[in-house]
Length: 90
Image 1: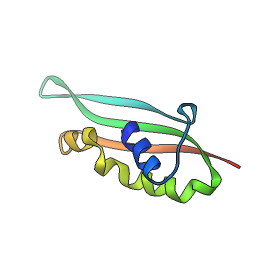
Image 2 (image 1 turned 135 degrees about the vertical axis):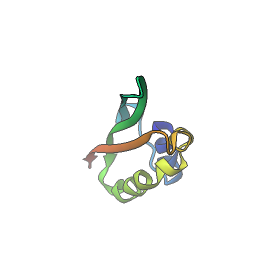
Image 3 (image 1 turned 135 degrees about the horizontal axis):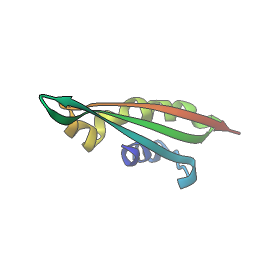
């Protein structure tokens, strides 16, 4: 998902340095009928962006999951959610 988000930002003219875009990902397993099953994936982005790019970044965040091959592949079997910690710079 990070690559898809980064691509969505690039298309919108927002290029972030590697140290300005990162993600932590947590997978949640639950026991279903005696088997451990991945049921949720939570992505936590950390972005440092120019304040002038905020609207473009928000739009990319809103739409990126629908274009992410991994998120779409997991689809109905695994809940994929994200949140973003955004720091604006001048």
